[in-house]
Length: 474
Ligand SMILES: [Zn+2]
Image 1 (cartoon, helix red, strand yellow):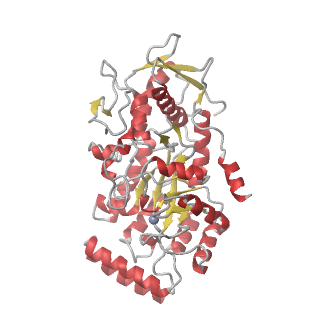
Image 2 (cartoon, protein in one colour; image 1 turned 60 degrees about the horizontal axis):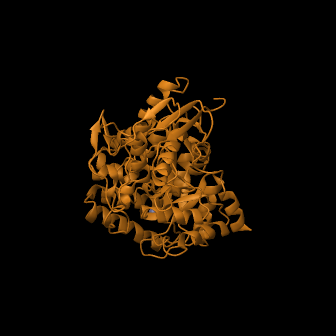
Image 3 (cartoon, helix red, strand yellow; image 1 turned 180 degrees about the horizontal axis):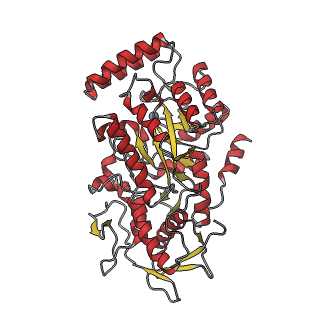
């Protein structure tokens, strides 16, 4: 595509907070559909929200109302097949308001408690709270509705969202390194623990038996018993896929992996990952959101020679905005923490990369979130056979491309490839995804392309993190 078309949003009389939120949502539309937003003057299409005193091309319903921070979203009303949280006086949904509800998730912010690992409980996710299908990217659906309205005024617009990667769909493969050790005793203990969890907690005696057999085989073949990094590297090399691996820089809690960046086995493993062309990123430790923890972990990775640009929280541990503030302070350009730990699907209704919204400053955080759509373990709940898991995984990824181009992440722990941790069929699901004909990019690359879109949408400014990163090094 040559030059992108321009769009301008005119907002009727309202308070600055609502205006900031509507501009953010309109930015999501422009970023997904590759429009350049202009704030003044002429544009290829002018969109009005609420009553404005100038000629416009499209008028969208003015139904968004701000709730107090402690009030969760009310039950949605179904309108033309979509769940609506914000309608105008005539009952017409406000697409910008709907998109804000999903992306910024004020509903999760209103959660009255944390779960056992200190996170906003997944059941307070907007879709989970209201019994909505988690595998439908509802924000994409609302943006598609908005696009139908805008395109009726500007038919030159493409019918579907154009991908910044060209034709086809793009996804991110990521791997969190939750255990790395060259010590036989440490690994034996880890595998014994995996077997006990399969037997007692998951009530999966078949997996317990599988763990025994796989361990014996790997010991006999002199292969790592508790980590599957080499298996993963070999399989990805064979398929020409580059992925993102996250490592824990500092372990300060019993739920952390406990390895050290200067450990010989860890250094060798991370070097193999980098030498194979993959991206190395930060797996924020259990306590990383206390004090300057996360910033120190980014600094430790960089000091160890890994120019990290983003990451994901261990245990997906976060409580909303503080994570993104800490990440911005760390010079991170992306994050991929937002997802359901025990379900597949779209926690923020978004099957596209977006900057999280800061509800305290009423502005976007200056980094890109790559939604986590699938964590391998969650697939076990979708059926009994690995065949069901593959179907479920492919269905979720395909749902992201009906009104989008992908740009979401899947997480397969390296331990899924050893046979000594989880049901062995999960590894085959991963290989099936890589062989399904889509493009696989690193999180850093997807965030970079997405950022240009959000910059053209006037939501983010041109990257400043490179400067921060330079300063951290200088
Ligand atoms: Zn982890």
